[in-house]
Image 1: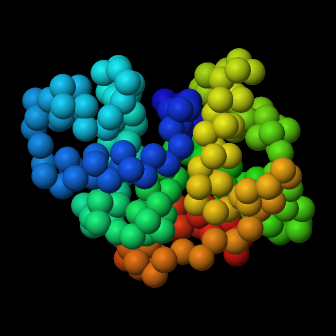
Image 2: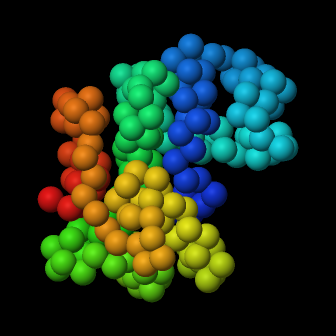
Length: 197
């Protein structure tokens, strides 16, 4: 089974939607109730049932990599706590994102070269093919779309500044997030999130 998948495309953090999905998970809804909420009641407020289904599925997949304690942080936490909890779930869910942080972003912080470009992303994806021979070869459009999602995620969580030429910057993680990840035994996730250390 390939390590690197394109399942991050079209999925920036989606904190608002993640709060709703976390609530459904905490209520332990049945598959029928899930389908009704997502496709009929349109709780995510998407323009089409297919979009709602796709996004709900991606968000649920992310949140299920963590435990109900994290779902509570997503649903009930302040905006910074919820954003960082969703970020942790995205990092746990996607080896593509996790390794980008652990390899490329960490290397940039260590070297002091804080500029991050799409060229770095494309070079990273090429290197992923060498690390994972089972990985699907993506066309330029898919690679760029995945890059859009990853750069947007880094921007949303504050790792990448908002500027004409964005720069990497450290993030202050909320104590609840650090405590959860340390107690929950998520060393790989925490290491990737703290690529600036």
